[in-house]
View 1 (cartoon, rainbow, N blue to C red):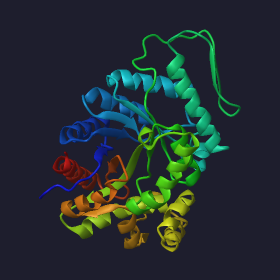
View 2: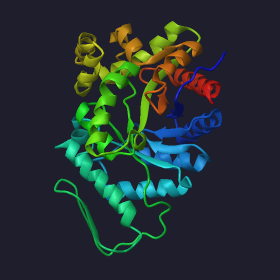
View 3: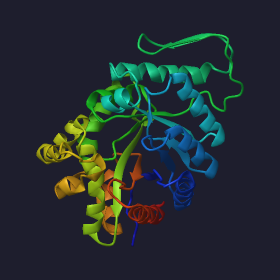
View 4: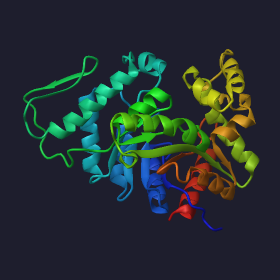
Length: 346
């Protein structure tokens, strides 16, 4: 087929173990992925990024996302500098807040005033990277995230500024990304229309507030992509990821923006049933939700859907569905997506 015009494509590789994950990362790099993204749910984002850095040679290595509040800003900066060294200057730090329950119940981390806390965290990470090699004392952050460094020197950081992207879904965080970040990373559930009509205006407000130009911010859309010769099977496989996020109240505005509040409510009711698991809610998902929030279908159909991001995103982070699927199904889906990247490479 004739490949349609699409933005640059990145990929978040999956693997049952790190060996399989890095093999998938190399395959995606060879297929033409411009960035390999490491998530933080079943693995540490920074350790996964380090493994990918050692296994690849050309693609950028990013975290999408590392949780900003579960590690200190200094630890975050040190891990970023290590990944940047391992990758020979290819690192991108993607930071996100996560949701309150994840921070407080799973990690024992503080989640108050997340926007201001994230702003101060970014200042600490950036200041540390810029100043850690000169040996002079410095301060950064603010009352929520203070950093005061004395008597410290890290020799020979590769770069004194490493790209720092922020993941954001709501308008407040999108404005913050436009104001202070090198890039914005979208949620894996979304649509070109939502990016164009809701996200981009908020990003522009932040850019204007900081008197920055649009080209100073990389717009990284995200898309859960399910490719299969049978469109019905592609739809079925993507439904589990939709159900996983629909069970989280924090994402109510995202579903509401797509006119899906009632279908989400039904998923949340199912999740409250005894024994229900967030990863096993595919059967409770209305197919309209999956069609609206993921890219699923045959290879040609998904390639066409990706063109919807042309002109509004600089790149797209592709993920494959995993929730409620067998390892065999995930591997097959991953192979289809890597083939799609190869077919659409410039």
